[in-house]
Each structure stands twice: as C-alpha cells, then as structure tokens.
Image (cartoon, one colour):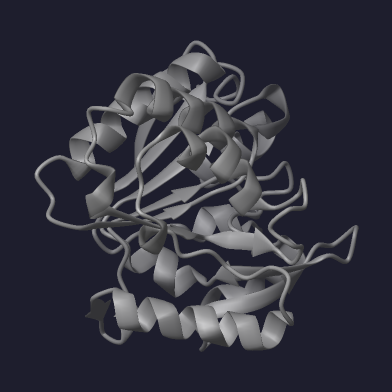
Length: 237
C-alpha cells in the first residue's frame, strides 16, 4: 500500500482529483465505483470545479461500491449526493450513470446490480473488474457496507450483498471483497481524528486488525493508495 498524507481534507481532495485525472487520461473507457461520505463530497466538488472541462466524462462509467436502501431523492442516498456535487455540474451522459436502485427490494436489487457488473465489466476469474474502486472507512473499520459484525460477507459468493447497519438496522447493497480486490486500482479516502485509531491498527497490522473489513482490502494488482489527512494519520509512527 502507498500512504499519501496531506495537511487537511481539502488537500486530500485536490490530490485525489489530480490522481483521478491522471488515471482516466487516454483511456477509451473507464469504470469507477464511487463511495459516499464527507470526503468524497469535497472530491466531487473539486473534480467538477477544477477538472470539469479537462476530463472527457463521456468515457467514464460511474457505479457505486455501496448504496443505502433509500429512494434516490433521500438525503441519505449516495447517488443523490453525487448528483448534487458532481453530475449536476459536469457533462456526463445519463447512460454512463449506473446507480443502485435503493428504492427497490434489497435482495433482488443486489442480484440485478451484480448481473449489471458482469455484463458491463471485464471479468477476471469470474469476478467483475473495475478500473478504480474508491473506498471510505468508518470509525468502526467498515468499508463499502461490509461491517465488522458481518465480515463473512467479504467472501460472499455473490458479487453484491445485502448488508445491515449494526445500529440503525438500515439495509444496504454493497459489492463484496472479491470485487474490491479484483479492481485495477483501489483508493481509500480517509480523513478526521476519529479514524486515527483504526488507521494505525490496520496499517501497522496490529493485533486484531483482521477483524476490520478495511484491513482485508488488498488488491491483487498491488495498486492500493490511502489518501489521508494529518488527523487520520496522526497515530502512525
């Protein structure tokens, strides 16, 4: 893994956006799985503002690594957040946006989305391969919507799974660990002091680190980048 540590959230977003522009450059087609959360929100703003006219958005296909099972008009929807902070500000064809239908019954929707990935993406040993998977990490060490109490979902047979938030009980559709680790590139966006303890445990592979889904992110390609601010990285020696 490569650790990229910057002063603050804003700098993380700027550097990630430059990394993204470089990745998509000269690609005839690029398939990316997006993340929700506060840091991606800033990333999307910067991508739209600084790279809106520098990137050929018609060549990029957007998916989600996970989505809350809510309608697309709900404030908790990752899709809605992306529309507000990115899609509404750039020229992207509607057919390039492949959202999880959070308003639908979660189990059939997970199957539908898995099938969509199989159709749209190249497969490596039967697993759909993204060009880039963007991930966040929760204070509890979860990533995508694979939580510690459901860590077995990481190796689920299905490419997409239905997860349950440990506190709210909210259902979510998420890609599994095999899809994450098959991606050509994986990038974590992790900011804030509340993440520092888990970052330290995972990066240093301290005792019990494998209890956290984020610790299981280990792409076969070897291309794993952690974009962090000083606060998230504050306990690393």
